[in-house]
Length: 418
Image (tube, rainbow, N blue to C red; front, side, top):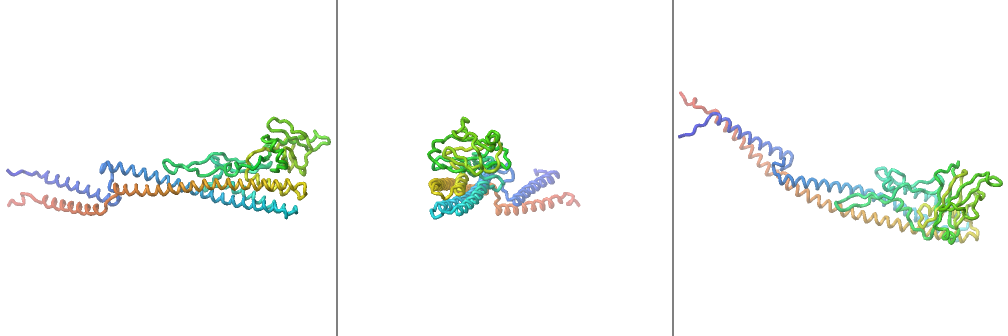
């Protein structure tokens, strides 16, 4: 017995088939237009999960590569600045050797050298306050918004940064410091012998403000005996003197005890203040109550070393009685400049090691990223040749189905009834 085929089946079944074929054709066209072999997780759950994992890995590596680019730019900038610092120190060292030449007897020649030393101090001061590409001070540690070094109105230099080092992650297990602090690079430099530095109290009210020099050591034995004590120079009331006039008192900073022979001594800007094997000068117009601090230390910053040299060149004449002090100042300056050069060299060596690390890590990231992208492409990207062939086949099948449907739906028994 022949099966009967209803008109509903004749129309519905081909329409469903053509819709299925059209959906498959549309999907293939979407794959070709997007270049993706997996359009949704339903197409390939395992492959889709693997592609997502690879995308996350590639994104993480890309972030590491951006971090490396930023770190390298910052380190290369720091290396360039330290190269300039090295050149400045080497030039000052040349001037120091020149100043120590016995053939230089005139005060004017020494003053001329001191003027260039002062210009080099300003040059070095500018270099220590360099900024990075983001406008932050390179040597201020975490306090990048603060100027690294400032020149105190009362004399001396003050480091405003902190000791924080910014570490940047360049891989899962590697972090590198993106800079060095000014304290580490320019301050914490071992002096050949105990030395000192001086500065004015920020609360001083003199007008124009009193400014203390970095001074120099005139008797190392006495300074060694005074170390590690510090001193405070305080300006007293002029009416306390007979006759009235500017006066100072020098006390130990630790206990406030007046240093022997230094209670209310007359003050003049042309007369240095000497104690504990040290001598300093104060210029300007200090007011009663103004204070200046002299701190002994086993470390000496680069700027202080240079200022002491300039002071010695300006202050010490060519008289025979001052020759020993002058020679000692030149010797100490050379030793301390060499220590500064060694310290800068060590910092630059660390920068070089970090740059080597970032370069090696960057190469490894490039290889890993390329491998991940290749695996991802094999899993998730479309095989265009196969997809185009499939598209042509699907178009052919759909067209054939449409033509067959058109022919079948035109058939009717009434066409055979006469």
